[in-house]
Figure 1 (spheres, one colour):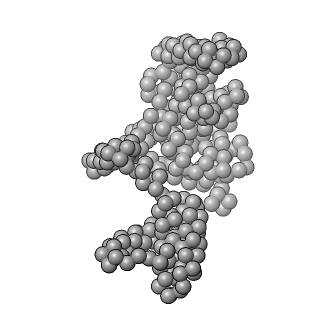
Figure 2 (cartoon, rainbow over the protein chains, first blue to last red):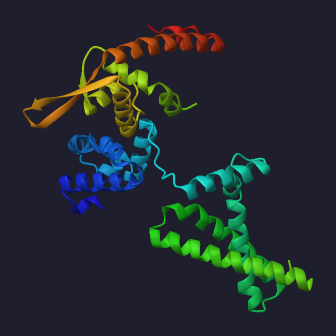
Figure 3 (cartoon, rainbow over the protein chains, first blue to last red):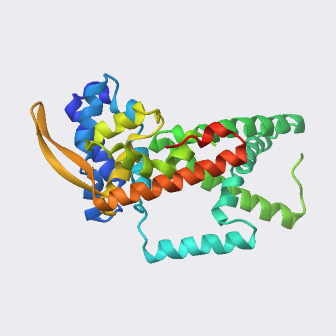
Length: 190
Length: 112
């Protein structure tokens, strides 16, 4: 990104990115936090030939650290968000967690395995392959899915959107599978 | 516990201490902190702390004309800031002594 920009343009770019990351912060606080930034970035830029991002980290991480050390809340506290947060801890506590999202995060690898296995099974079973092939496909699918899952945070935005779309489609498929097979009392050849 | 965890709790004290004898501007304060050995402290953490201390009334700012470029914003301790520094330093001394006791390591107690 920064190779094609002059240092001044890079500083402006970084400041804009940090400002955008602080969009939900009240304006007077945001201006206060950003007040020192351009001068600081200019000095950082002057101190080394490396890009700002390599010296300071990505702008949104910088913004997060700035807010956390300044004691400023970043999240917009609308009514819906507050209610969801309350629901998150309520349901979480029923299950023995501080928040429900903690459980969801803990289940992420299990989901990766399930979705990968499902793709493998659907692909091969749908093509009427013999059982050992289906099982192998499930295994390979699971392994690939875990690798993808670990790498997803580094994907560009369109990549992450694609992954979410695939996840949703597979979740729907999984639910339909579950309903169909449990009602017909048929079990997958595993 | 890594240094970053320990740092979060004492960055206020570190920043106030840096400004005890000499006022400083942002980048200069960062440099002094790192020169003292706190090289893992993040830029954003220091600036965020400066703004929080400023809003809490522990720091004041003034501008100084700089020959090389735009004016620099300097931070200085207020009276309240000095009081905070003294209190925090005493608290730190007690805390370090207690940790020294727990760790049975007399070297950890040498804080002035």
